[in-house]
Image (cartoon, rainbow, N blue to C red; front, top):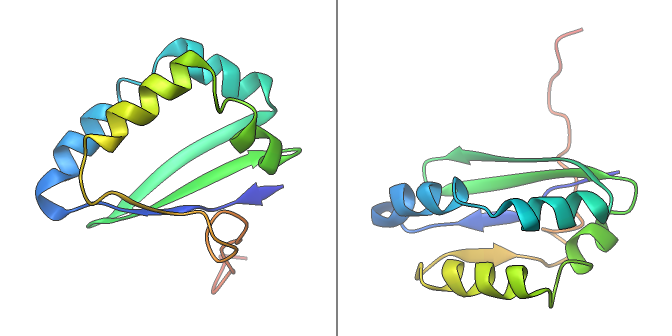
Length: 104
């Protein structure tokens, strides 16, 4: 299964957001993998970000780490970046990216 939550970050905070993403604690990546993630890539186009998550049960891999001390600390760190907007609605977290064109 693949889901694609969306994030938007303020233009003047892109570098800070990317720096924060390079500092994800190993304990948190281990927890996400243990919850079933096989891949998590974030792609950016200007200030729009698309998170491409893959795993057997993406709802589980998003929910299971919640509440772990390392996730609570991480969420607090990311909350310090104002105007980062996460779309966890049905149009975001559960939405796939439709294929518009694919090289045969």
